[in-house]
Length: 193
Image (cartoon, rainbow, N blue to C red; front, side):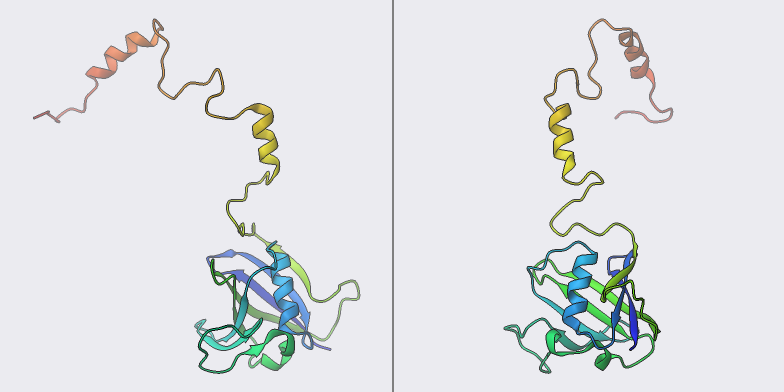
C-alpha cells in the first residue's frame, strides 16, 4: 500500500508547514481532518480542496459538501474521493481552503511516495511540524491562555500604581537641568520661518 507524504504550507508564510503521511486509499475527508488537527484549528467550518498545478491555479474541486454556489463542474465530495484517484503527477499539488468567511488558504504538495508503512503510526499522521501555526480566531501568544492569569496576578493593567507614562518626570529632579540643554539642541542649518 502506498503512503503519500504531503507538505502542507500555510499560504501566507511558507516557513509554517506540516508534513502529513496518509495512505493512498484514504479519503480527502481524512486529510481534511488531519490538516485541521495539525494546525490546531477546530472543525466547525466549510472547506474544500482544489486539484492544482505548478502555478497554484484552481482545478477540479473536492468539497466537504455541495455548497449553495455556482459550479463550473460538479464537485467531488471528500468523503467519497480517495486521495490516490486524484494524483496525476509525481509532485501533485492541491489548494485547501478552510472557513469561507475567514478564508484560511493552504498549499499542499506531494513530496514523497513510499511503499513502506510505519507500524508505529496511525494514518493519517503529522510526521513533521515547522513554525508556529496561525491562531484561528485571533492572536496567539507563547503563553496562550495562561497570559490572562499572569496579567491578573501581576496587575498589568495601565492604571497600576507606580507606573507612569514614558517621559513623565518628577518635579525638582536632576533631569530639570538637562531639559534646558535639550531645548538648545536643534539641528544646524534648519531655521524656523
